[in-house]
Length: 382
Image (cartoon, rainbow, N blue to C red; front, side, top):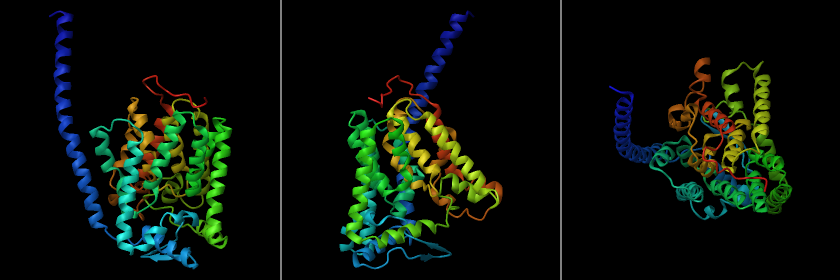
């Protein structure tokens, strides 16, 4: 049999196999999306009224409104938690004080889900069934809906940064960056990104908007709650939680106390250095994935529900031919499976309990080392 005949037969076989795989995918991904939606609903049914996060925010908002201390430690089981949100963030929850805790919780969950959806749809990219199934199974989606954290509401702001940078509206980009950093300080690498791009107008706008947000908070509650908030930040003692995807989470879980600070700061320095080297190259979506994943790695508390912030940039980055690295599939591990992995042997602390840290590191590394495959990278210095 000639080589041409063999080649033709092989191509025909590949075409048949590809067609079969396409038909299989057309069935598998919708089923996974439905199963993921049911899983999220089951998670909310299993944990309808968690005693942390949103109740903490709700009660702190009421305390600030009534002029009482809002950052006292709250015992929850064997843990003692504190509200780590700055006083001005509680503006968002003020309208919910008109309702009881339970109605407010479910309305907030609805707003959070809406924020995540808007953050994706603003990217104006087609959402494949594969991507949708991944979003429903994402640890970020489940954890943010269970806890009632603020990440979902912030997602449209990040996608807004992506869209405005495409249009060259850097003053708007800087204003959005300033508001987001004022809400969550761990997003400070976004300001570093603007500095590296030499977008000085955006840097100035980010500074002004952040100052305005803090000034509004001080005008509302005064300076005393801010001092209490800073004290609460310094009293954090739950870095070893398995939902913490940061470098600090990994080192606190797996290293002896004697060497932990040295290893942690060495790893943080390496991430900062490589991030600086890679920023300013390639398209905006890729750079935002780098910045946001680095923000989670560098933060003392890089909780997995903040992965939803990068939904819009991730969608655009993937639409240009980039794929998830193998390590990042850990980000789709349901959070309840890892919720109780605290006191475990060393190998589990590095592998199982730190699955989310490994996943975020893989995502960060993939974004740092890849380029857009379709040649449509945007200039971000125009």
